Image 1: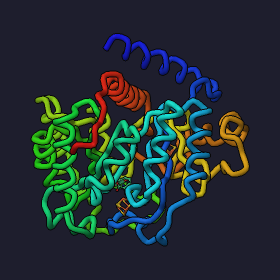
Image 2: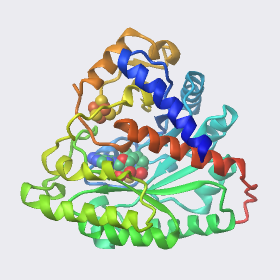
Image 3: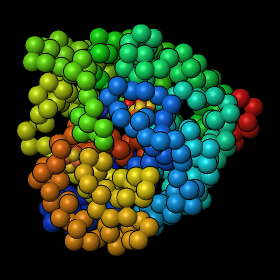
Image 4: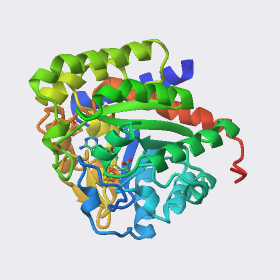
Amino acid sequence: MKEISQRAKQYIDQLSLSVEKNIPYVTPLTASLQANKWCNSRCEYCGIWKSNPGNPLVKDLFLAVNELSELGVQMVSLTGGEPFLNNDLYQVIQRMNDKRVISSTMTNGLLLNQKHLQPILEAGLNSLCVSLDSIDPDIYRSIRGVSLGPVLKGLKYVANIRSQYPTLFVVSINCVISKANIDGVADLVAFCNDLDISVGFQPLHRSFESRYNPERLQFLSEDLLPLKRQIEKLIKMKQAGSRIDNDEAYLLGFPDFLVYKRLPERTLCTAGFTTISVDVDLNVRSCWPKKPIGNLHSQKLTELWHSDIYSQNRASMLALDCPKCWLRCHTDYLSVQWLMNLLDKILLAKSIKSEFRGEA
Ligand SMILES: C[S@@+](CC[C@H](N)C(=O)[O-])C[C@H]1O[C@@H](n2cnc3c(N)ncnc32)[C@H](O)[C@@H]1O
Ligand code: SF4
Ligand code: SF4
């Protein structure tokens, strides 16, 4: 653990200098790469599922992985749409492995079965993050428009593989907190505890591509106190040993963000240095809510990273001249510590990883 903190400390030192001078002395810890844009879910707060079906060419995803690896990105997280709908996903993960980039993917969990999971585990997937907003079937369906059954079945399948091969890959849950599910978050934590899977929370945002955000999911000023109480409950559960991935300071920012769309005072966003986003058409963004600043079909990422346009973008991000999100990977030095801990957890699992024999 000593080494881990030292690594984080060194990165944060370099990052502080980068922030001070607006010069990237660091390369991103993580990147988010869109593996496709279509989806088999129907989430109320996300418009991606309205996109036409189809996957990008695998050679384009390879190009993105090559460029991200060349830049020095430590972990690439495949997102979507629904990545599991892309049958080439295992090849992309294999490519990350070849390039010694830590591989991660997010999924809505509807296809968490042997047919879809086995190829990507055999390809060397390091980290799997499953979205789960509620364990109540009615609430789940009301938010995500589809049935909870396959997701719960899939999670049990994953938990079973992990009990056989504990170090094969890291699993976590991502839950988007909205007015529709806030009363069930403690039950969700208890469910994750039972499966021995950690859970992270993220507040509902309006700044995603769809900007579709129905009123019933949003908190009003009269919801502030009950919301604060639920967040305090989560913090107490974390203090009592529940595996909640978020930092307490981050969770404390939820009520103001969810009710008033306000970030805590003196928020510093370091996302322009620590993360990078590449969409399905290979457009590069300094963070998802911002406009593209280049494209990997015509530009080298290493050049873009050090370009004036990127530097202007970073300046606007540091000044919070942006949609002002409260995503855990996008805020101050605490998020760096969190990202670093995640990377170290995965690296540790990798170093003692046993062979996946495809017996599950
Ligand atoms: C865009 S999805 C892509 C991966 C996959 N389809 C899934 O749902 O996990 C990535 C994550 O963003 C979350 N998300 C989508 N729209 C959101 C919003 N408006 N506010 C907060 N999180 C959102 C999803 O719940 C999911 O955990
Ligand atoms: S959040 Fe994920 S599962 Fe839901 S519609 Fe968007 S892409 Fe699909
Ligand atoms: S706070 Fe602003 S700059 Fe930072 S990630 Fe969110 S939208 Fe981007």
